[in-house]
Image (cartoon, helix red, strand yellow):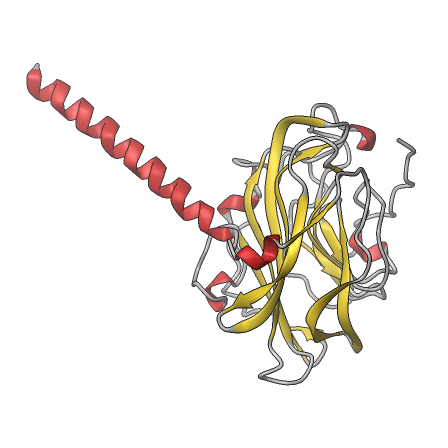
Length: 280
């Protein structure tokens, strides 16, 4: 009886330690550089910063950009601000966009979006953070934490850079003005990038209800893409991209984890037309 009880206690302790270890490992996806929190975007719904200087120049499909716009709704655009809150197929946009989690964030309640410059691996970097952010309409019953980091790689060729989508916690996928209820269902979030003229990428699970949530079939915190190529090594929740000579480099076919779509090039077929923006 005592041996059985002791085994149960040890088993419970081991399970708790493993769970804690998994939680701690997961938390490393977000880069905690203090510089990435130097600035905040005032509380808003569907707002954007003005043009923010990255501190270095990037070449994105032949367009040299020295900065971009941090948009409340989970993305950074390089050419002009984006106020749209219902996520659309990135293959249909005419904007240059990097979207770690394009969905209807509402910061009028809860934490603000932060951004700023720092270094990663000794290289200049720019980061934008959406940590514990709420969804529209002023609902903090569920929160998400994610980050975009852009890293200067002009040490290779002028304009070269890397970028990361770092995901730590995804509990909601939709705002109430995007046909969602309580943060779920409706027009779900999209994750990916576009150069605004036909070159685009989205992760598998984009626009699929429940896919990106913690525990979902394409859970963002439980998968990764090319994170072994980034500073820090393989990290669940990190989606890593290299841009060389203006083009996003297609990763080796054996690198992506299960559940990650690796379609690069001339856009995704069959994602459908962007939905018309509904007024809030």
